[in-house]
Image 1: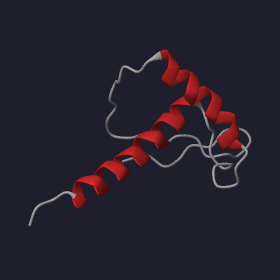
Image 2: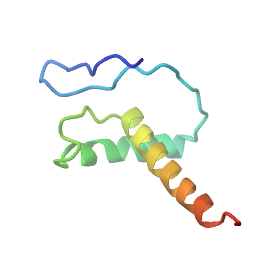
Image 3: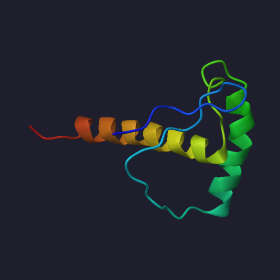
Image 4: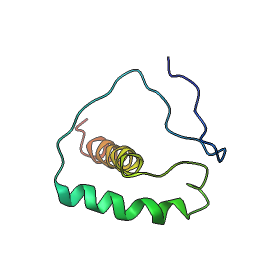
Length: 79
């Protein structure tokens, strides 16, 4: 079971602690892209409550990518 969200000193929600971690190797270019996106996302109202770091951006990107992949696989299923 995941622990409740933690809050930083500013009251913003930080990452939740999850049951599992997974290590992924990514290129430096991918890390650079995530680092550039973090402050941009932080300014958006929907992300303001969260502490946007490169790691947080990567989690969002992974979930969005999984959504797209699942939709693609659902559309290609044979009946």
